[in-house]
Length: 278
Ligand SMILES: [Zn+2]
Image 1 (spheres, rainbow, N blue to C red):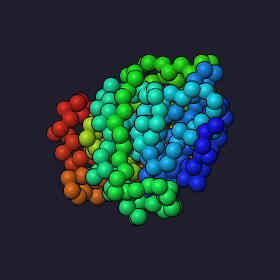
Image 2: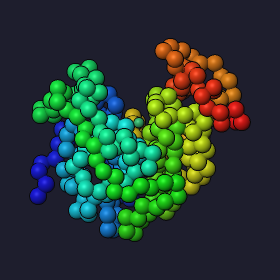
Image 3: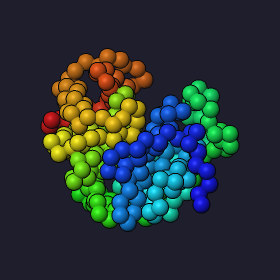
């Protein structure tokens, strides 16, 4: 028997086609991980902040062996990787995942202001860190994750990070988007991030829209309607076409839209040659 899962911290939502959203709304990142149950395997897309035991929650929802697929290597997506044996990710995220995140960097995400509900009692911000974990298998554009009776196609969606992925199931029209798309602040300025890569990612996702039924993003309100992808794509195209930023500070430009914003480096045009051709 798994130990009593920490449902006080996690907010689990159940969706059609054996998909569960496992959210952490008590932290400002408001990250979601997704459990997808197949006939042979269950896929856990991301492992959250790591400040409570997401494995116990996942194992309370399925008796299938769990395969973790990381959408990318940011700290709010790999926190509980160390509790699992099998982790797949894009090759460009392996370094971040295998390095983990030290306590010094974690602390600013664990101040009292970071929480809007009481964190688990055993969380010690003075020592908390994310251990590095080994990636068992790398996956890239067009690869398939076969769970037995259902398959997800890997869509490489760089821009937020260089090795970000989304996962698409053609039979159901489900897209698990990672950080490629969500309501709220979208970021193309992180290390490994790129505006021209983000354009490519949104082109790939937009091409899927006619075949999508639902989009599960990793942050904020969810699920989202597929057409949201087109609104984000159009916004980024306006930025690339020369739209004036709404805010500029610390070397960053921020562009505000109805349900989201984009933050880019103010120097991105000179840094990214490929954007010249767009
Ligand atoms: Zn991220």
